[in-house]
Length: 332
Image (cartoon, rainbow, N blue to C red; front, side, top):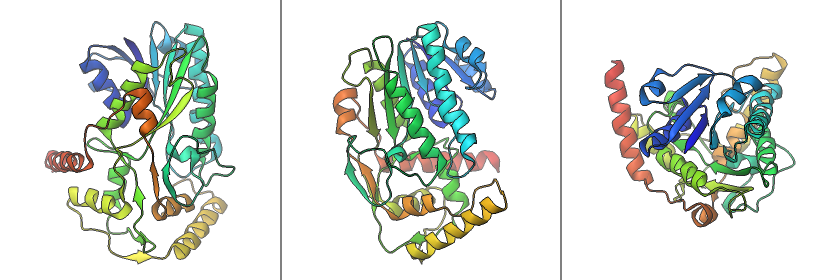
């Protein structure tokens, strides 16, 4: 298979690339930065932007499938910044695929596209999109997901995956975020509600499963699927386990959800009023994520994609501990 991975140098993109290479597929990557490590793996690495139609047509030429992983993530920032990458960039990918006759697309979405606030317990893909979003990332990812699923048809087969909270070795987002804020973290509320997470290897495997199954008329085509480890943990248990893997003490102090939401609202107003671009220390979206249950039924992905999480959370935590320890030695 000749595959294009957008954002192939990123955390998830690299894991997908590694698996494609390992099984003998030809891989091309397009990203805004240069990644010599991809070239060393035998990946054809192109430097370009999702918004550049010429670069995207060049990237899509002579490939069989696109894994569209690249996105602007985060919980803060102007809507236009997110829209340019997540929506307009995705539309550009679809346009380039049509121009080049590429027939398959696996799109990396997010469960946050259907987050309504409040608890989400064992939800399946019938959960509708909300009318209102607390952050521009899920809002723009939801628009992009709908564009991708709407493009499914007789000439192109598309599928969207919603992996929840991906973590593991080489993580450059969730794990370092938790470790860097170890001394400042506070449990929000007294409850310790269940949440899903996804170990990186499992997230990558899900994308290859989808890539192998998606085709015109297939059961998965034109649909979105929740992906996770399938083993929900209490929020602060998994946070403390990641902290322990990094040699940090657990989070023990609490603040009420009401107080956290007041502080987050004030910070958001202040940052917007002062036009501060960096992320506030707390946002309403983060408060909702940390104080509510959010875990999902992955039986549809298991049935239609043949997905099976092969690395347990316990095993993943041990791998993370070893990787963090080795990384610390390399930098010391």
